[in-house]
Length: 389
Image (cartoon, rainbow, N blue to C red; front, side, top):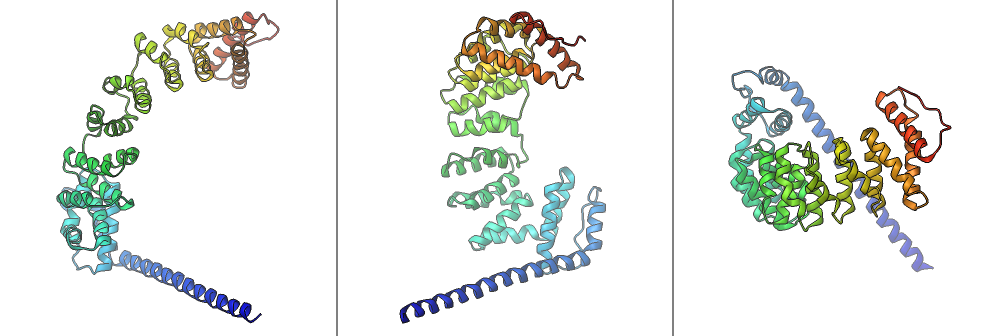
């Protein structure tokens, strides 16, 4: 009995200590937030005229002057944050003037010194601010810091800063090389960082896909996925036959997005690919490009062993005009009684139902008329009455 009471008392004391500690932590955070808010308000009042001067003259020919009074540490930090935001949001000469103002205020040298002689946390903070200010002379020190840094989230703070400060493509390549030593799965993140650099991104990504190492090829393909120029299609074409399934799929996706016409031999190669996803991409590209000359290819794909491929072919034929719709209905009738034939018939009926809901659109109305006509003609049903354009 006494033991239980003693344990309960100790437990109560522990709860009290934890509650007091938690209260102190919350109070400290609140005080810190209030101080920061107060500093920002005082900064806004004191620097109101100067910030107005900066915004008025930011697009002028003359360089921006430093404020006519000295800044204490809190004001310097507030000014740093304001200039960081302006550099991130502006481009061209406007951004350059903000970067030059950072030098005039001594902010660049402050963070260069912190990067060289500070503690670990100070160096990380300095690297972040140097990146925001695009300080090119900081690149050698940042690269050295990155080389000796362990793998954690701060690694990417340094890497992104290097990309922002990069003097040329070589700095970016070296940054990528160092990051890849830590892990081989940061491709999208690396692409996002590379795009921060003031270089020709497309050229660098195109160079990466010519390398032998798969890591660089992945980065190059991730970077090129939003490009649609024909030159990109020719650059990725050789990767269509890559033994790496992921690389092959990405290469096919980029290639098909970047061309205006697909040669028949390429279509045939893609439709022989063992990956369902690649065959689906090829069929969708034929439909998107309205390549009616490949209706015969689409017709053959209707009987593909993969349900996904067959479905993609059917939906593609619906977009290839009268000829495509006629072929779709014809194959559905020929395959009547089989699983594939039943699936095609259901898909056609679903499309008729879907198209009938929005017949105010001329294209949809035309497809509706054609689809109903060929469906009823092929399956021997003439009871429906459909609209005529």
